[in-house]
Image (cartoon, rainbow, N blue to C red; front, side, top):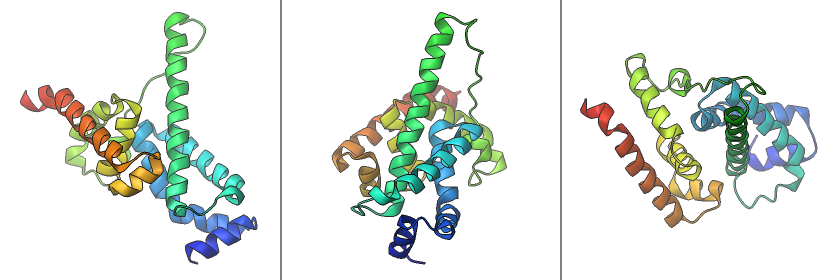
Length: 187
């Protein structure tokens, strides 16, 4: 089933088309969100939310971009919402710690990503921790381009920024990572 046919069948609300959509995009969506959130259970929940939102809002999809770009855009938005909620919870917890249970921040993206060999898991975990400390837009641009292997043009569409802005974010992310990782690699 080609993309046009898939979109048309999704707009009709066909359950089989939804199954095809999930099968086709589930791994890419999950790993994209995992690389941004760096927590497997949050990534699983977010990926499910993304597919639900895609199914519920497919009728408003104008087909001005590819289906994948539209799905990634929803995914990035959902991941950023989760990050904002986590930061709010952390602020509240720091002000009144007895009110909310403490949450452990997990950096398990390196351990769950099938593209990372066993011998490189520790280095990858350190790298993913440094990536998680980048400002949101830098983290997303870096993750989509350097970790997910997307092109600048596709990242530009997903983030709805110019290619120059994406290049600038990527450059600043690399510089920030270089500064964060220099002690790790020089020790």
